[in-house]
Image (cartoon, rainbow, N blue to C red; front, side, top):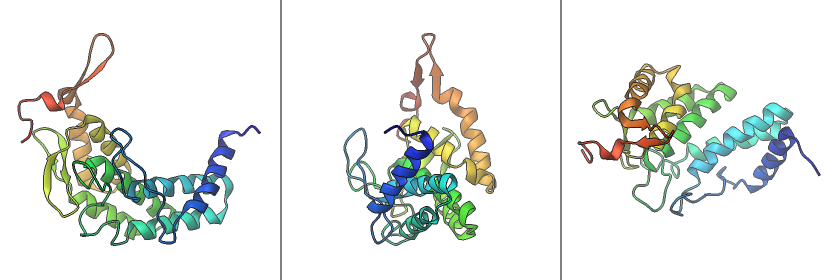
Length: 212
């Protein structure tokens, strides 16, 4: 049987509703590079946005209900146990999963606030964003662990770029997010370069203040 993209999204999300746990969480994944065990947080945030897409295509209320349950989990103590950043990774270098883990949830919360006209979701996104420092010298965001500790700049450039894209929606409402996004984009010429052969070289780890 052939499906068009609309049908693929709707059918996938129907299966997703069957996978959702009682607490609203979706099955956890693994870090795609290192196979490190993750919590359900990032997958749940991503599924919420998928459910919105399926709702837009079908107008089936069950997808909105599943998205709402996703946020029940994301706002729970399990997802954010210390009231600081979200608990995204069980093993690996950190439990916050760099800035990419936090960006995934921030983006989903802002999207959810638009669908549910719930400013509370956006307030949580603002609160988590406020806990992630920005290094103006390096023009990069720093990592904040789930217990609130500043554990240094996230030196993976694609994490930084992903985080930047994740806060675009927030930047329309939050002045600090908009300003930092502009500084980050201006700083890309220092943190990456395009070689003559077309390859993109990440320079973040090579700069003189690595580790500071």
